[in-house]
Image (cartoon, rainbow, N blue to C red):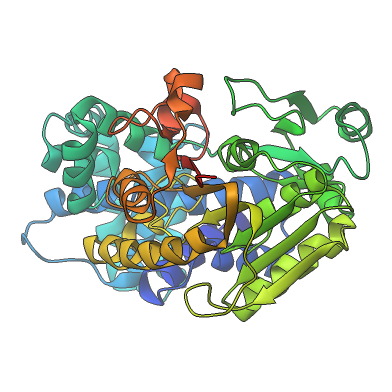
Length: 450
């Protein structure tokens, strides 16, 4: 038995913790990589294997099932994890030699005490190698929702959901984007340094930083796109010089457009990414209140502001639906809890945790928060509603309902950015991971009549 590499040890452990112990992939990865002191390229490789194998569980499990002599039978969990990793490496990880993928998977099975399945694992993976072209041809067929679920490794219900809401072509494109790498962007803390100073200070041989590009509101001036090693970015983030944030996320605050000295209410503020962006724009003369109902996330908001050097914001641990909150704010942001279907590329296990029931549950919560938020706006003030999901129930349906119930005026964002217009109502924006290469945020803006 050959010695298993640390990178594959991590990926194997992450797979088992995700699917056997129901742990979050990102948290499991941080612990496993940290326990082995992985850094640099080794850590990056371990993350690619871990995240990729979790994402592709649907495809790899379908391949295993097609090769099983007894239909409906599944390998034991320890064996399943090794097969998921091995098939992922054979079919989807270009840098892995075939013999290494097979050998390491068999060694993982043996190291888990499942020697009885070593021959089975070896045979199934070698068959995958022999029939690779035919297997990939089957995976290329996404002509129906059922086939697309296997091809793109998504739960059946979600494929059907997008097939109906977005159409077949866009559904396929969104799923393909979710299986690719997530956008790597950072926001410069302009209270500490300029964008140009950040580029000069952080750029090095293994890291390139360039200004974000795209139509309004996709390229806020403080946003940079990062290519290469993120070690320098992580250090700068600890110093409060930059914050990791997608262009989609930053676009929400660009639409909110907080101005120096204004009174801003940031509801559902945790973990504080947009809160810091707002604080930088309103400045020390501004009055900002951030509300977050979850204690840990409220603490995250406070720490984020402290790290960035902002002391002019009030963080309140409260439920916006029930608590008494001051009114008369110039601008209110409701970045609501949602199903996160626009952020699947950065959350590898998220697709396996979602359900139609979740969408209905968060939609009810969103409506309750929005109804309270409408009462916090001053006359002539504005409210921005955003989610990081692609779901009509949570997005345009909520926005239209809010305007109707409270007499708010819908601002026509799509007229200013027609390329980003929501497919269900062009007055709203719906960013798409496949088209815009960022998080799939929905954004609507309303004005309170004078």
